[in-house]
Image (tube, rainbow, N blue to C red; front, side, top):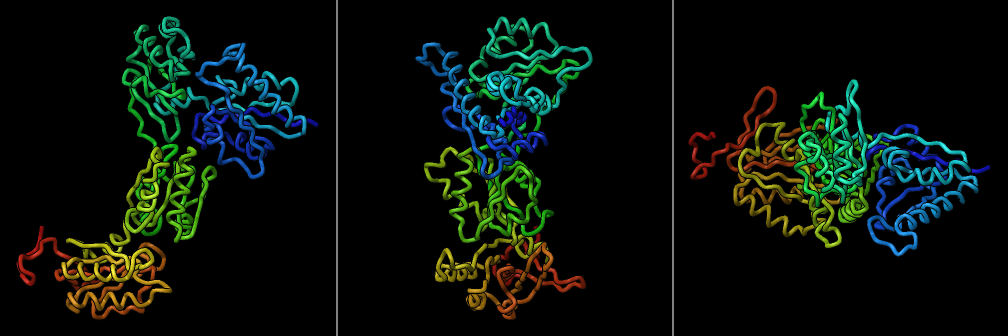
Length: 508
C-alpha cells in the first residue's frame, strides 16, 4: 500500500498558531518535506520544529533559483517546472514505499504556497489530504487589531507583481485589500496605492506573529528594508482607529540573556516572562531551567553549572540557525552569571550577526537586603568568594581594599562543600578594618521554602552556619542595626559624614 500525502499549513509563523491537527500529523509522519532557497534556511521547518520527532526522514527541497537569472532553455519557468517535477519524484518514491509524507507550508497550503505544485503532480496518484492553516492576511489584520471587512464590504487579495496601474485600478474599486509578494515589488506597490489615492489608509506588516514582527504606515517604510514575507494591508474603512501593537519580546535568530530573580516566578519581571514565553529554546543551568514550565513548542536544554562558555556557544549556534534563544540565570544575568559568558563568546567574529540582548533581574543581594531594610543604602561593592575563576590572593586583595574604603559588601558564593575555610578567612580580613560590632546579614534561600535571615555582627559571624545557598551582607562603619519587635532593622544612611564618627543627622 502506498503512503499518504499531507499538505499541512503551519500558519503565519508563530508555532502556537499551528493547528492541533497539523501538529499531530507532523509528529506522526515518516517523512517531512520543506522548501528553502539555496541559503538553506527554511521558515517552514523552523515553525514546525517543536513538533518534529526523532527518526523522521527530512526531504529538503532547495529551489534552484529565486530572483537569479538562468541559462535553462525554458527560462525561469522551465527551471522551476523541472525542479517541481524532481521534487514530486522524490516524494513519490517515499509514497511508493508506504511512507506517509507531510509537506510543510507556511500559511495555508493552497494560498500562494509551494505545496500546490506537489498537489497538482501527486494528488491524483496517491491518497492526499490538505490541512488548512491561518493565512498571513488574517495574521496581519490580527496584529494590527483592525477588521479586514465588515457587513457588505469586499476584500480583494492581490499579488504585488502586478503592474502599478493595474494594482491601482483594483485598489480603487475595492473596500479592503491585501497585497502579497512584496520584497522587490514594494516600490511599485506603494506607487499603486498613491495612484489609487489610498496610501494614507494602508499599513505595512512584516513577518506577522513572529518575534521579528514589524508594523508601520505604508508611507513610512523604507523600500530597501522590505523582505518577501511581508504584505500591504488596506483594512476595513468602517473601523479606522488604530494603535500600533507593542513589538514582540524575542527576535528570531537571537540570544536573550535573562535573570529569573532569586527564587520563584513572583520575583520575575514581566519583560523576562514575555521573553521566555516567546523563545524557541531555553538554555541554562539545570536547576534554573527546571524552574520554568514546559511548553509544547519549546525546547529546554539544562546543563552543569561549570560549562558556561560551552553553554553560551551552544546558544549562539542555535541562534545562527534561526532560533529565538533565551539563556537563563538566577538573580540578574550580569552579576556573576551568564551575561558575561554569552557576551564574551559572542565577541568572536563568527557571531557578529547574532543579536544579543540582556534583560535584568532582581539580584540576590537586593532580595536579602530587602528583608532587613536598607543595608546597601549607600555605596557598596559586590564580591564572590569562589576561587574557581580567580585566585584567592586576588579575592583577599579586593576584600581588603573594599574594607579599607569603608564600603558595605555583598558577598556571593561564600562557601561550598569543597570551600569551607574562606568565610572565616574573610571575617578575619575584614576585622582588620571594621569594628567587631559591624552588622552582618546572612540570607539563606530568600524567596524559597527554606528562607532564613540572620542578623549578627562581624565578630560573632559563625562560618559553620554559611554555605553556598547563603549570601552575606557586611555593613560599613555607618551601618546600623535597630532592634524591633518584628525583627531587627538594618540600614546604611545615604549621607556619609565628612569625618567618620561624625554624628550629624543623615538623610536625603
